[in-house]
Every structure is written in C-alpha cells, then in structure tokens.
Image (tube, rainbow, N blue to C red; front, side):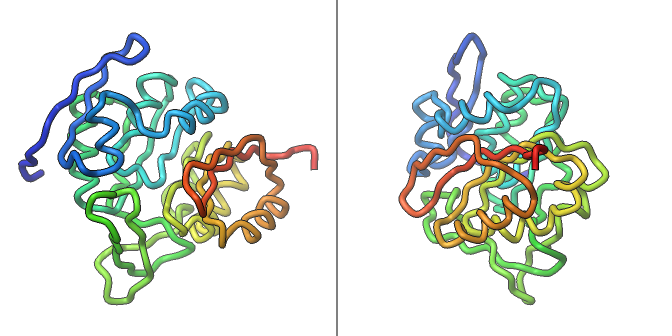
Length: 231
C-alpha cells in the first residue's frame, strides 16, 4: 500500500468510536466523513432494518467503506465480503478498515468487477471528486477482470446483498443467479431509471418483492427487496 496523504477524523456515533480517513475533502462521500458523519444515513437505516444480526453481508461497490464500517460497527455481522475495483477507493478502504479495526471484513475479492460473466473491462471515472460515480465498462483491452458473482459466492453463505454499481446492476444480478437462487438473500440495490423496467421484470421472475425505496438522486432509486416465498 502506498502512502496516502489525508486527515483522520475521529468521531463518536451512537456510543461507537468511528474513524474516517479523508484523502480528498472535495470528494462527495469523503466530505461527509470530514464532518464526522456517515454518508447515506437514510439508506443505512433501511439496510439495518432488514439485515439480521449474525448474517453475511456482501458489499458490492464498497467504495471507501462507508457501508462496511457501519455494518460491522452497528449490525453485528458474521462476515462482510467487499467488492471494489477503483484502486484509489481500495487504498482508502484499506486504511478505513485498519483505523476501525474491522475484524469481520473479507477483502479477498477486491479488484474484481462483478458482471454477467468473465471478461475484461475498464474503469470510467467521470468526476475525480466523486469516486462513487466510477463505472465499469466492458473492454477487451481493459485492465479490470470481470467475473460473475457466482464464481466466488455461490458456495459461500450469503444473507444480504448491497449492490451499488452505477448502472451495471442488471449485469451483476445476472452473474449472481445461482447465488440468489440458493441463498435467497435480502437485497438493497441502486437501480438507474433506464434499468427500472428490466429490474421489475427480474423481481417478478426471481420472486422478489419491494418492501422499501429511497431516492436520493434524480435518475436512480435504491430499492429494498426481499424474497417472496408466497409466490
């Protein structure tokens, strides 16, 4: 890990000591951490209502670890498995894991891009001050290895999927077909508007029902969906 310059913000949230590493104070998520607060607190509240203590949490699109820190500190998971491909975000994430002594965080899948199947891809980062907008696009000449989530998760316990991949959510779901069919996890997923009809069809086919939703940004909505075993 190379040396990163930045600021360590120490704060106390709900009787827990939390530390955030801020490398770029202009970055949208890190600007919240600079204030000593979690990013997307409304979304975290929805997740915490549906994540069961002792479960395995899969953080797809971990970024710098906002959700991962929250889950370990407040939700008592058995394990958190992180997926992130942006090298800068990974470096900050690793610092945040150390600062918060996260003992349940599995980082063995960092660097892989979850997709519908195997292939190479490239990163597209439209705003250097918003790591969260980084997208992955298929590219045979790219340097990022794309894999189906089933390749690494189908035979591992999965209780909760959080998916935030900037428009690539349907490909990620396709690559997790076996995992979802086997484990029937709760899913919190950001869906771009152009994917909304396909996502609705996927929910009907996979027998999932929407139980909550929250829209923070125009053009995309976060959905909390649960398996509908009544179907």
